[in-house]
Image 1: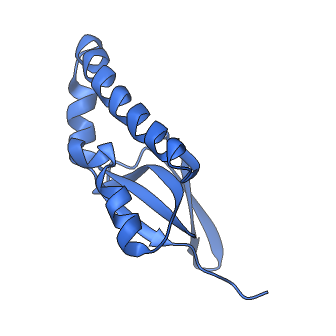
Image 2: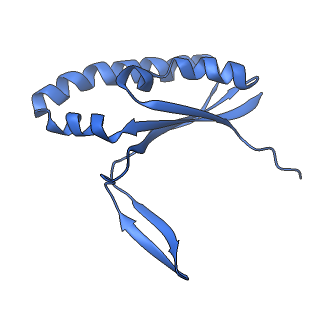
Length: 124
């Protein structure tokens, strides 16, 4: 079996709508979101595919080369169109199978984009 990384890219415009919701609206919506992610994660575990998974905070730091130094930019990153919201690291026989696994990711039902990439196989 090969290893694949499913990266979830959240649209910042949709995230802005989420942030504009009242705490009560967020709590109600989060019940549905959480239930879908739990079911998807449990399915990957039952199939023996899941290696790791995590949702990521909106806050973080970006390091970039800048004229011989390293520039640090702290988040959240409102200037970006998308931000990485989480990932699943799992096994599949090939990219076609990994793509089918990814089609079940709840992020797709909430307007997010996902990317599936195979882990590189380094010699040695």
